[in-house]
Image 1 (cartoon, rainbow, N blue to C red):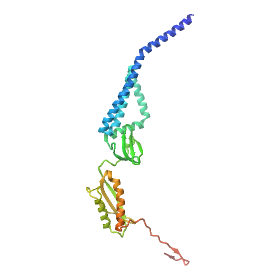
Image 2 (spheres, rainbow, N blue to C red):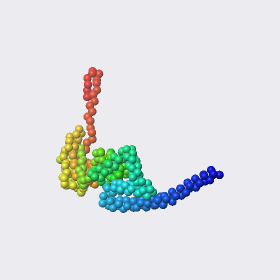
Image 3 (cartoon, one colour):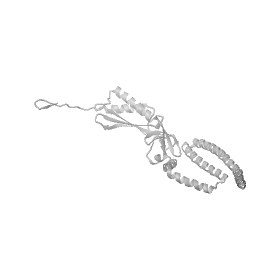
Image 4 (cartoon, one colour):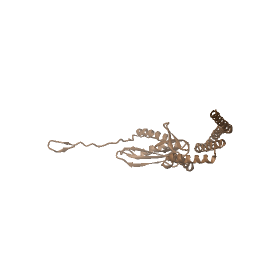
Length: 284
């Protein structure tokens, strides 16, 4: 009987301790959960407003800053909720620091991408909306995030490039200037009139409203090829007109040369045949 009453007493003691712990920590846990839910909602609302405001002023910077600020605020919210439950924040921060160090060593590539994103935002080799050529891709920059840059190609592909690669590699910003030079070369036959060919190119240049007069065009003989005299045609146009201008001018020059009787030769080779007769002599 004494053993039975002893075990019953210990069980009652454990129940009382459990009830005391629940009564002591349940309000704190509930308050911490409410704080997390409300805090996350407020952070998301704040990030949404910040994204909208920064997007109107600087679309290049907004995604990066919003992602960074959101991550910092959520970490602070978790630390605050932990302190409300009764967890010592100093030890909690120490654990987070140790975990952060371990994660950082495991994710060195991601840290390099983060550093690359910071360098891109500081030095601004390109911004959202620019057309760049990098890592073998040509397209318009759609987004610069904390770790990656999103590029939309002109054939409607979405390319995600790590910021670490972009910050350390050579890239070409195609749209940074408002005008570009359109380089074209047209080959004519050696028997054709060079001055007439140059005059046709000049006339087509002046007839096209997209042609810019400053700087003036350069139309001259660029080289003497194996099968043709190469007429070099360099004209300045607005950046947005570069490729439409190039394609249209290829067609216009071909039609104009055909109308004026100027040939565009194709590669030719002279073939000499030799036969050996019965006497051993060679004839052509």
